[in-house]
Image (cartoon, rainbow, N blue to C red):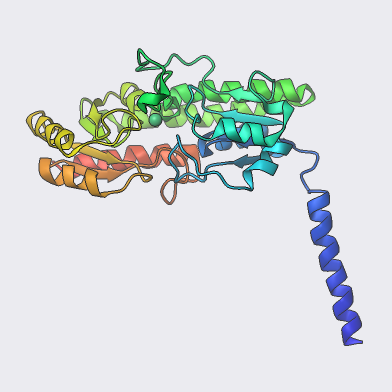
Amino acid sequence: MKYKLYSLLLIIAFTVVWCGWAMPAHAEKIRVVTTLTDLADFARAVGGDLVDVRSLATGVEDTHGVPMKPSFVPVMNKADLLILVGFDCEHAFLPALLEASKNPRIQVSKPGYVDCSKGIIPRDVPKSTDHSEGDVHPYGNPHYVLDPVLAKTAIANIYNALVAFAPEHKAEFTRNRDVYLAELNAKIAEWEKAVKPLKGTKFVSYHEHWPYFAARFGLNYFGTIEVKPGIDPSARYIQELATAMKAEHVAIVVREPQFPEKVPKRIAEQTGATMITLPIMPGGVPHTETYIKMMDYIIHTTVAAIQSRK
Ligand SMILES: [Zn+2]
């Protein structure tokens, strides 16, 4: 009797698991894959209950080098939409994944290939687009989402792609987008007020993540610890940077969590600047699961660092 009960339970368990795989609960949902977690947050905000969103990155990775996992290929294979940053931000991992996905819907120039940089004017476009020099920003700086006003362009591109894919749900997407934009606009006003003590503050960061952020909030982006995007510094370069930072009273060293702490920490100690660790996408540090929470964290951490120096 006991065995029979166990067998029955086992059969039920297998059936549940098997059906769960064969017929996912979200089978009818639009399957969205994003490269980074900020875009996933926007897609969830606009898509609501109609989308099943997966992000390749978890938030702690280098935006230019999300380590590939075998699980990415089946997810990409089933995707209806692939949402990406663009400006070749994902050059190191996305082209190979796209090929391996064998999914014609999301290939470059297909409607399922959603490039969120459409409509963004890139900063810092280099003269050469040659990857062999190691520059990971060949078409200009791709970190525009860290400016919450430019993030709205990414949100618009995601909205347009969802409407094009499922026009019958346009009213719901529009409602969701408007609710999210209202929340974001209120937050932008709050952030602009909060950064007032930061105006003109000079800072450096490890990687060139912050030109759009600095321009939006009136900070002075003094330079980067990397020689150029993707190229680590030599000892001599670090020394020259530290000397220049001291002379110019640079107050803050930003360390992004995907880079080791050692060099930024040493530079901060040498120059008397304050080192802070800031996420560059949601999930980069604890309590930053959404884009708005992440921007809250970035603004408040930076303001607190400046105030602690006074
Ligand atoms: Zn970059």
